[in-house]
Amino acid sequence: MRQKQQHAPLKERTCYLCANAIDELDYKDVRSLQRFTSASGKISPRRKSGACMKHQRIIGEAIKRARIMALMPFTNS
Image (tube, rainbow, N blue to C red; front, side, top):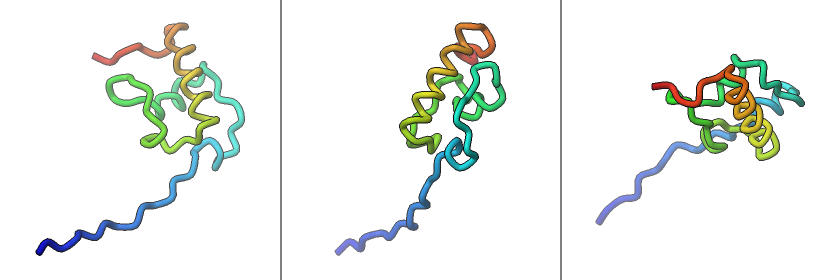
């Protein structure tokens, strides 16, 4: 018979923006936006970034604006 493997308990993630009481995320603040992108320049999903739904929308919008204004690249190749 196979025994079930026990996994470590999942750590409760808190939203980075909620924890630091950041209400607005400016598209000109490229350093903080890079925290929410992958190495290839893609926007990180909520399950990976740990952001809440409200802030994930704000993050995506800010990253897209920064890309259009040429502050961030669309891809890192």
